[in-house]
Image 1 (cartoon, protein in one colour):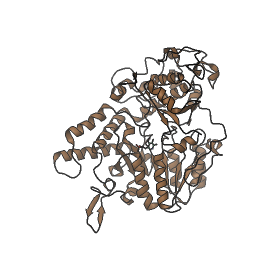
Image 2 (cartoon, helix red, strand yellow):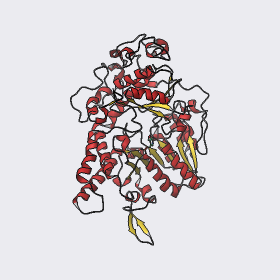
Image 3 (tube, protein in one colour):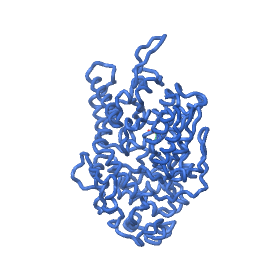
Image 4 (spheres, helix red, strand yellow):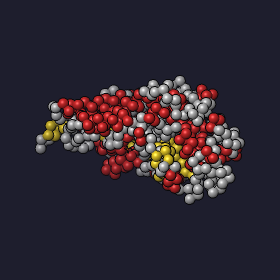
Length: 552
Ligand SMILES: Cc1ncc(COP(=O)(O)O)c(C=O)c1O
């Protein structure tokens, strides 16, 4: 893969037109960066209004007035509402101008059956183990259907013990799922069962416990293989998580194939885990990092990405979903373009694997990495997928037990992949829990999960428009359930502290994506990241809590 093929520029141009017709209009002024990480100037062009395209076409709606909320604020109280009354109740605050002029009951929320009937996900049904309890969304959001009722969220929530507690005296609303996810009881049980019954070190002993532990560990590898559609379990390497997996590729593949003057292409909106390992490699080898820009919605400008590729490009490493913005990158097109230049692609799937189906074979991706703790499994475990031929040609990156074939003081020979990359005792119980998490997700189905979360995202995006002074950072047309925002005049940390007092766990900070946020002229945001166990009611509580903010 190290020799670039002859680029077929017409084919590439055609691809752009077909897949990304409007990107250049937005992004043509965005600078290209050739060395290291750029500080993108905040475009002088007006930032796109923080309105999700889907939200714009949605029917007008009104959120329950604050009198029903926890704060008990009266209309017109400037003390309670520093920016005036919640704007969802006012026509003038709606970009569409179609909003209801006064508070309406939640039964008048906009997502009627009609509005959902056109959904591409409308046909999807929950295939999981859920019982006959009504969907959690049904009681206070009648009239909503489609994906929202296709998942039995009440039954799902019952599987997650951590969700059923109070923090600061209020029912916990966990909206920090991009950082880590809560664990279903089945994952907790699988880990606990391993330690109480099967615990032994793997691969190295003939007794029954060791055999059980080995079977459980290798069984988890098979589950990961199946989860991402890999051809062979040997293509799955267990590691600590996404960060370690990217570092492995940088230090093993990179040190072998990427030299002085060679280029690695990433994007502006990467997590630091997909920036710093390449910078370390660049320092070590003299390679150069090239950064593809995004437009004002946070969407990759595909033609400018392609214009960075050339004879010196040795690797493209790109996030599937941006953790700070929610942008879903068009990885099919990215991979097709990179491959047309003979360049292999690593996809950081840390934020996509919890939310949507990912299939490495269909994608024809070269490397794919993700973390167990973000797919409702334990911390400390994750996976690297690599095509067999690539993994076999890569040198080990850490030495120790298990990764060797034969050791003498003169020379050591190594196992094949994946063992070659798994020196020392791995997180065996973590792998077992990881496998249980995959079972759990597959039992529900990633497609219904994606559909449900999309509806939550559309609803939340629209509802957040009602908060005076709120600016969404990241308004890509194709987005996962991440809502990153700032509110004029308020520090993100203060907002997060206020939310915490309401029992709402949301993150404030740079989300390990400083260049991404700086592209939008901010250092920090508040980020509410939703999972399939979150509900419309929780979104309502979040929005009401934001309406109650006092000026810091
Ligand atoms: C897109 C992305 N990549 C990489 C990481 C790093 O994952 P981990 O800390 O599990 O290694 C994260 C974590 O938030 C992420 O969101």
